[in-house]
Image (cartoon, rainbow, N blue to C red; front, side):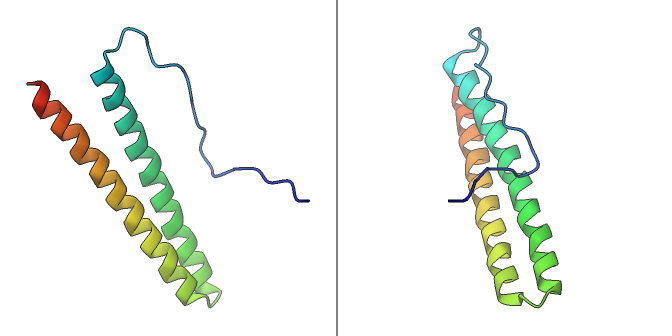
Length: 90
């Protein structure tokens, strides 16, 4: 049985969100965290796509680029959600 660990170059900080924040502030904070997190992953996918393409795995590299595009699309959805919340609060 292999020893599997989840390592990917950044730390996950799962601190309890400040009790003074409203529910709206909490979700906005989470959305911004998720955006940053996804953007980091997408950049990592692109880096690895370049690396494996130089090894001759162009089809695999294209799939990583597609994964990066999809990840970026998720981030844009989070951005839209945050904008909707912020505009509705006004």
